[in-house]
Image 1 (cartoon, rainbow, N blue to C red):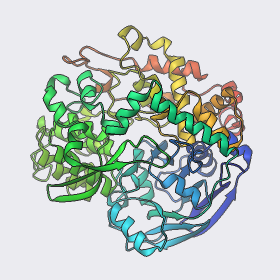
Image 2 (image 1 turned 90 degrees about the vertical axis):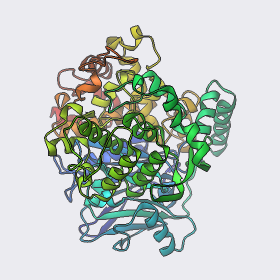
Image 3 (image 1 turned 120 degrees about the vertical axis):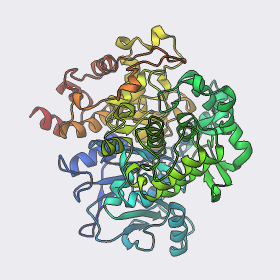
Image 4 (image 1 turned 120 degrees about the horizontal axis):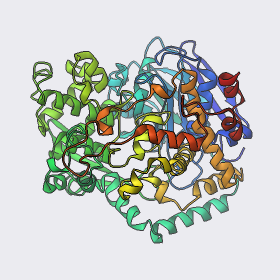
Length: 619
């Protein structure tokens, strides 16, 4: 089969059974890859109502269809599982080199169930999998695990992913880390991995994918480069190449996109010079050592930082992404760049979702400010707004799972329930902290935060339809947004299944996901077939939730982000959004029942490949 290894690996850690399953071209064409494969497999393999930490619970590590094909910007993979945070479908996306490395080892995906009796890691070389003792890795940080694996395994090129100590403790904000500072972070994926006593996966091999049309693939890659160097996206591409995802942090704070003071503040709370003080441009001047690129990416939006502060020193720390800069900056009224970099380092080393980690610190900081949590509750930490030292010390507690950290490593909702305070200060979608993009500024985000099968994700609606800069009469025209929201959603489904970076919404010419995948696989999708494949994948992810019994009324967004009550000052003053109206418009366009959020039979029939789902729902 062109463009695929054609094999999936299944491992049962309870029994030690290792199984290799081949799949055919029809399966690949129907589900593409990434979480398309993942959704189909988990729906088939996991019994309904399985607890996320049960032996029957399965976690998958799935390469995108473009991984390893040389298609530019096609280096991302997916981790899929049931979330222990909100108990539904979960996916987390990461870049780096691990996705292509899975394919070099001879597979398109690795699926693991069961619980090992003691810590283990998987070692996969040229298609052969071993379950190895990981006792010497347990308790170690991510970079320590990578160094130990390189010492133990005499191979020049290793790909690996790991959980840190927070994942070992099943902390609900635990991430899966690869390439030292790349994270598949959301929804508790690291906790699920830890619940299985699975510390990591190490892959290596010499398997090379056979491309259907290598010459066409090279030509398309040249067109991508021309588009980025000479096309209308050149200024944006240049900004990302120079300063990464944080290139526009100051503007995001000023216009109301970034969270301020746990989403209760506004640009009025942060002087322009304080926004500039923590900008990526300013931090690059202080900390940047070199550029970093994920696999197959000509832009290279990453960088390596060096620092020596607060008792920590590193010359291989990932530059804080936008989400981290805003989460540890404006959200906390913090301008201490050393604190931002140290906490970012701790999040990566200990395997913590930076969005949930920073959001949880912001919640705790508001609780301290309001007198609902005391310094005694916080192990003696005086958690005042903007206190860099206090931010670092609290992050240490979370990273080590010590004292107050044992509570906060499970997120803000868990902490509010534990202490019985601060539920009005939660800013989550079904208990998961949202990304650093305010839906009072970009209302379409509220729909994705609530109604995507993986709640709280800021990229699920597609970056190409961001509406923050639109006039209010368009931005808040909820009833007419359905078609635009569906277009953005399906674009994102296809980029995720293909293993393309989400920022390719403006980094690739139009319709290039399809063209690149066609050149690699020979599938010859038409534009309409490709669009239907994206819709099928979204419906498959949602079917997982429907089978669990989670219908429309289960999903929610905390009041603060809906503008209930509205802010009194700043660019978002007086704004209240109507999440249900946006959901109605989206569901109507998708062919979904507005009452319960269940797709109509004919919607499933339109996309095909889901007869079992139709039978499960409609009999």
